[in-house]
Structure formats: structure tokens, C-alpha cells
Image 1 (tube, helix red, strand yellow):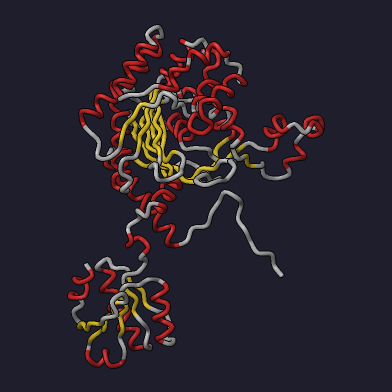
Image 2 (image 1 turned 30 degrees about the vertical axis):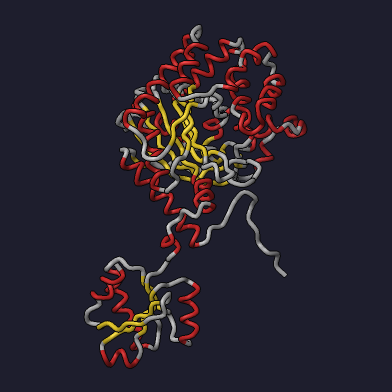
Length: 459
């Protein structure tokens, strides 16, 4: 007996209903990307390893899926390397490509390769899958889609303001009102590290700080100590854990705390610009809040950092994030090109909408009308009618065989078809068709030569 097939952990099959719901999210995000002037691009699912490695920090590098070279790759490895069983020295010899970890680094590579074809500032959006060798859990998968919007070629803070508006517009239309858009700045984090005397441990400091909501204040302090940050420095950072008040009040407190740091003061000024502009133009439903502990684990952010928290009713991680990365393209040889971008976490957004029952009911309706099959002549009449209905943008199908009518009705019920069309011998003689409302159980008769009345009713 054949073994039942399975799929790798952290991946999923999607049913027709699930695909329809995902497309609803995709379409909503894409619509607003285009309204804000972003253009679509696509990049390969895998890149050369040296394009990806070293761009996400040690933690990120470990989560990159490597692709084995084709052919007899082992034969090309020398005996010393092979017998050492050292993965760090063996991997480059047997794997030259890797699945993309995110869309931002491939985008930076794209900009450098196509810089002579691009009109700057270049606003691009990209909706494609990415892969991470992470431990699967709720809302965390090994294969998932990212929906990114980025701008390169301008250092204007108006772009950050627009990205906040973009988040607000998308989540408002998805009926995720009052989501919390968290905002911070890497310059502020660098300034804090400088003020507390931990500037040489900036990455370790920010990575630990970013885990505050997961492991708590004591957990963060413990990790900082383990990473070599002194107790004296951690003590000086204590005000960060109790910073409260309005955005303006927090910015004032940070301005005072970082008055001796030039880079920290610059970060406060940039955040103040964004906050004040948003206050002037207003938001549809989202909340914008300063979160000085927000660091995000990626090494390439240099300015503003964004993260969108799921509604409090749902136990879920962030559903969006991004930031300013002024130096990203320099890793591929193109200097002085500023960039900023955000990402929507499609899979987590899906889970949140599902849990809160926010998907429109009509999304799962794959058919508007099913025409039953009573025989060859009747099926031809049904085909002509369905052609007319499809021209009116209705979703219509014909049951392919003249099997028992009870079986055809059962098929319609299983697919939740709202209207079933019956054209039998009597209807052919009368040049008519009968429509049964499956929800109400009622029936109405229309003329085959003029289906406009039925079409008008469905609309």
C-alpha cells in the first residue's frame, strides 16, 4: 500500500476558499500600493548565496535555506574539507544559491543591476513568497508571502509619512481598525547606546531590546549581560523601560536624555517630523505611537523603524514592519542611494481576519449561478444562457452531465451556490428558464430570450 503523501513542516496547501480570502487581502494591498504611486516588479525565488548571506545578521543567516549545487557536488569537495565536517566551510563548496529570505535585499540587488533603467525616486511594490528555516508555530511559517512597498533615491521624511498613511489605508479597508503602528529610529537606539557607553555593542543591545515584549525587562537585561554589556550601562538604560506619555512627551524626554549625542538628537528630530505631519493630516483609523524599545532584528535599518501590532484581541506577533535603510545598496557597490520601505505580513493578516471574522461573506462564493443539466438539448440552451450571464460578469457553471437531478442539487448545496437554473423539456417549449433561490427555497420563471430581468435582480 502506497504511503500517504505529506508536505514539509511550515508549509501549507490552500483550499479554494482560502485562496479566495488570500486574494482579497492581496487585491486590497495591491490597490493601495498603486494609489500611492508604487510600481510592480518581481525577482527570482532564489538568489546567489553571496547576495543574501551577511545581510540579516547571524540569526538571519542561519535561517536562510541553501540550495545544493546540481550534479555530483560532493565529488568537488576536497578531502580535508569533507572530513572536517564543518558546515561553515563545507556549505560554500556545495551550495552557491539560496532561497530568498525577504524581498528587500533582492530589491536592493535589482536597483543596482538596473540603475540605468530606473527613474529615481523609484517606488516599487512586490508581492511574492519568501522562505525561512524557522521553527513553525502559530503565525510563523517556513514559506510565506511578503507584500512590500519601498522607495529608493530620496531621503525625504515625507516618504515615511506616506508609508504610515499607506498602512492606515490598507488596514482600514480590511476593517482592522485601531491597529497600532509603532515607530522608532535606529539613530535614537545608537544615541542611547552611546550615552550609556555601549556603542561598541550596538547590535547586541538592539537585538536584545527588540525582545522586550517576548521575554520581558529582566529577560532583556539578562541577554544584554550575556552579550557583554556591562551592568553600569544597563542601569543607565533603565529609563527606556518606563518611558510613557504622549508621542510629544516621549520625544521631549528622549531629546533631554540624548542631548549629548549628536546622532541620537538627529533621530529625535526625524521622529518629531513624522509625528507632527501625521497629526496634521490625520489617520483614518490607525494609531501611531512611539516605542523606543522597538529595534527589529535586521542590521540594515539606519533611520525610522515601523512595526504594526495585531489588535489586542488576537494573540499574534507583528503584522507589518519596515524602516529606512540609507546604506543598503552600498553592499552591492551603489553608494548614496537612500531607501525606505514597509512590508505587510499576509499570512498573519489572514489569521487575524479569520479569527475576528472580518472576511466579507461573499468571498467564499465561487459561483453565482449553476445551470442544471437535463439532457443534450436542454444543456445547449443552458450553455447559451450561461454565455449571456457571463458577459454580465456573473460567475456561472453548467453541470457537465445529465445525472440525477438530486445529485446535481447536492453539488449546488456543497458549493453554496445561491441560484440554480433549471431548463427542462417544459421550459424549452415555453422558451423560459426557472431560477431557484437556494437560500429561500423560492422559484421564479424568466424568458430565455431576455435574461435582463434576472441579471438585474442579481445585481
